[in-house]
Length: 191
Image 1: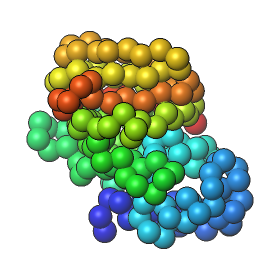
Image 2 (image 1 turned 120 degrees about the horizontal axis):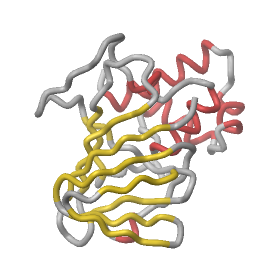
Image 3 (image 1 turned 135 degrees about the vertical axis):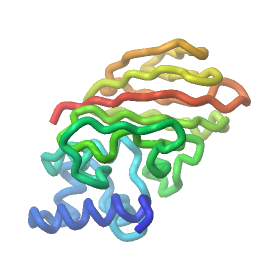
């Protein structure tokens, strides 16, 4: 099963196990029921913010839907061996193809942080969608330059720069200019 379909199937199975109907979960997660249907049935990967809202509504950690294996001890991911790519979508049913996430700890159970390597392709400004969710994010620029719309401010970060932000503030991360960028992002949200 590819990673796109796997997340939706896991959400649906967990929701049904908890005996929660789709409309109630959508209401509790503040999502459109059609969006939840696309996630569960058509393999649309939710935006990271929407995935966090779904996990909060179900009372589980985000790793419940991203985990592949149960591993209690430390998890080592060697260079070039990052797990499969995820492109998180917006509620517009399209994937955010300019953000490709590589999970750096999918095999670690019970984790409270989600570390990702993220490749950011240049995108049109009209593609920028602000999102917000509970928690915090740490971003370190590995290659290129990025811009972060954060509330009413815009921050430009170059290779070697980092930012630690509260995710509840509406934000968007994108490549600065016409060049691709690569970042390491660690996302934390309280369970």
